[in-house]
Amino acid sequence: MNKTVRYISSAVFGIAVFLFWHLLYPHVLGFQEQNQLFLFTWDFFVERMSVSGGLADYIAEFFTQFSYIPFLGKVLTALLFVAFQLSLAYAAGRKEWYVLSFVAPVLLLVYMCDIYVMLCYLVALTISVLLCGLYRRYPGVIWASAAAFLGYWLIGPAIFIFAIFVLARERNCKSVTVLALPIIAVVVSKFTYLQQYPWKTVIFGINYYRMALTVPAMQIIVAVTALIPALTDCLPKPKTMTNVVLGLLVAAGGMAGCCVNYNKDVAELVGYDQMVRHEDWDGILKRAEKYQPDSELGSVSVNLALFMSGRGAELPRFKQFGTRGLILPNIRDFISNASSCEVFWRLGMINESLRYAFDTQESLINNRKSGRWMSRMAQCQMLNGRYDVAEKYLDILSNSLFYRKWANGQRKYLRNERAIASDPIYAYLQSVRYRTDFLYYYPEMDKMLAILYHQNKNNVMAAWYYQAWTALKKNENHDNQTYTGNAHGN
Image (cartoon, rainbow, N blue to C red):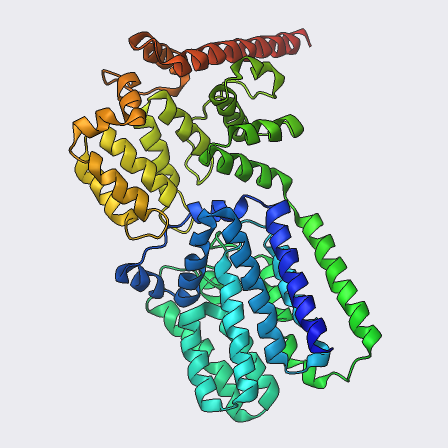
């Protein structure tokens, strides 16, 4: 395969990866970004490096933070996939089998239809395969053994791809050391600094998959296909038609795999959440008109968009899920509270917005922090007059790339009631929030909304949500009575 064709094929693959994120999962990378907070501090680096795969995780989070700007995140992720493909071609060393370098990246793209797959896995695979390429050109069992032993700490169990590559090339007793050392590293790690992790996680990777105790079969399949460079020396020289057929099969298989594994429900939920985050009310309603929300979380986003866009009278046009479709009760996971948190914030229920934001951040499965939710908590604490706590959050955010400017701009409100009163958003929220404390009780949300409105008639949002809540609650009661009557009739 000549150089021009190789360059064109890699470029086409990069464009295909970009379109995958842009068309199938346009909001997922932004969702991944809000579930982490990359900090430019020494403590943050040490924290990441304190577990197996820390370097790969650190690099992955560095790139993930750029998904704060959706287009930039998609471009950088596509480039990382191309880097993985080029590293496989580099490790294979046989240009005539260039088409085989696309197999593992395509399978990984199919695997990433699961939003729990972390970018860390892609980074770890790329580094391991690059080591394979370096060994092909600069063989040496001594440096390979050191790299394999340290590699488990730096990039995690993906280092076994490199170890098996060396063993397959050398096929002697010395090369067994390269495979034995990372195995020793796994055992030593488990009984020293990774004691709190189960064996499955230590063996298959801590930050490769967000659900730590789960190891999907696709993760192993992708790792196996990444060993293709170790096999190319055994293959005969291919014919031109062979490369064409293989290329078409890889492309067709990738498209079929992405279509089969595409999770529309997840894409919709994440999409609604991200559009609420960016206040794209028209986008939410256009999406809902095309695809009616199929979940309570989606309904919360749509109903919020109806009010914010001045189309509250159109509530009956959209699929509803009772009162839970207006505001969800507190659910401690990393997505369910998102839209309800935003509803509380705009209603002036500051403490509930704070609680929902805090619970969402603390429910992140891999115990990360969130720039989005930390920002909201800082705002809530400032309105509550807890300036020391708000300042702590702002100090943390000021060490990030995309939240630094916002955090530094918020410092003028610390211990400055006059500045808060001059800000249109903060001043409005201070005027419509509750004037007295009471116990929050979700089943009596209608009463709490009524209190909000009666203490400040300018809070038209509270009035609209009260009316909607009352109407939907009546429908719920009517449906329950109908169901009960039918049951007794039988």
